[in-house]
Image 1 (cartoon, rainbow, N blue to C red):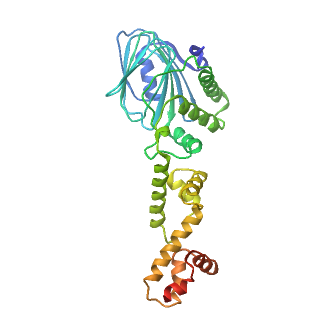
Image 2 (cartoon, rainbow, N blue to C red):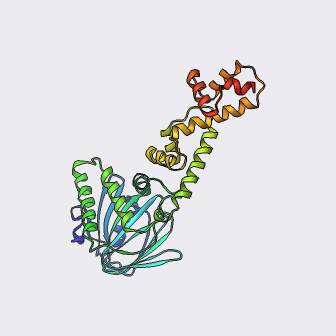
Image 3 (cartoon, helix red, strand yellow):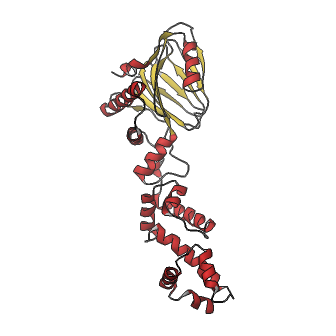
Length: 316
């Protein structure tokens, strides 16, 4: 069933392997090819779906393919026929029929194809996993998502096959109808691959990560203490959703991010007033300097936090 994927997107049914390689270099990604025999038995099917790239490729001869770092793209690779050895700098894994792996974006890799090898390759931007992780897991690891270099026998998994069929079908439809909104499909793909392949998100200490996040928030507030900061801006700076930020502060500080931001600004004003010899009328200027424009509300919030009005702090 998998060998029928992208049949409508055939570019070369039978061709010289170096002709196929030249097309791949122009339209898909850089690589170098060496084949045992130069016979016209290579084939290629290729389609795109937004920023996803899909191809089914075979060289018709034993072949060695070297690729540079993939630069922000993962490659999901599934062997449809034959065998393929994947060699990293320090690791090597072997794929036979139905075996799949995720090639990371930060390593140079060499592939060794058997003469009858045919592979499905799906190019997936790392941003797909970043967005999926933020939405589904609540946070993104500081170094991004990293998958283990493992082989998963997924060719017989019905859900996996149907997912690939759906993605390929949508890519072929896009050639006729143009790209529609496929973000839900890409997010679904990201969710399922996070489910099928082991990764670093499951191994993180969430408490330690949350405290690190709050420390990052403190630094950003300190750097921008003289202006109002919105929760959305803070969440965007931390590379998480506003809802995730709300949950982190609820768990570890017992207040909302907005309340926490206001408290930090009030504490900064308190420190200025405690060490100041300025006159009472300067309280207004200090409050406005820290982004408080509603002075009555500022005074009420200040008294609620410190038990005294700003002028009293200045006098004391």
